Amino acid sequence: MAKPALLYWLYRGALVAPLLAVSVLAVAADSAGPLPGTVTIETQLGFDALVSRIEKAVAANKMGLVAQASASRGAAARGVKIPGNAVLMVFRNDFAVRMLKASVPAGIEAPLRIYVTENPDGSASVTYREPSAVFAPYGSRELDALAKELDVVFRNIVRDAAGG
Image: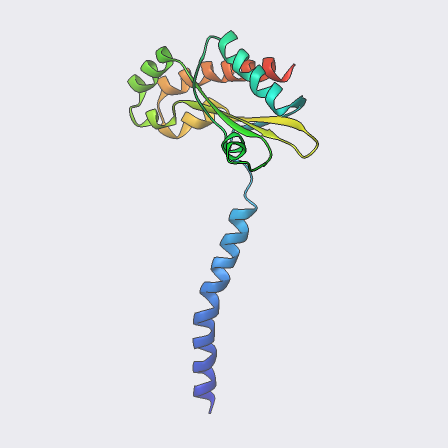
């Protein structure tokens, strides 16, 4: 009689263990924090005001606004209201040329992104990843040097837009 009971528990364990592992991974993924080098600044500005200030700060810091995407604006065009969010993609050609000279695979990281989100109280936050964190995995000294320059530029853009 002991053998069938042992087989039952082995069989049950074989079914339960993978389900438990998937559950643990799902919880871990859901509770994962931001990627290294992620910076978030809370502001008292409204969503549209912060986006506008970032656009101006990008230009003032001699960078280019390559593209912009906003799920909230797209939803609004369909008559759906969701909290404001926008991704502003920022880069400049001379940086792009230097980046590609240092690492062609790193080209997938450009343009770098600045993310603006509307908070429940109507204020907005700005989030970006430091370029040094974005480019670190490529293991290039030239790219690391470029990224440090871009760290300063992005810090200045966000500081200027957020008001200090």
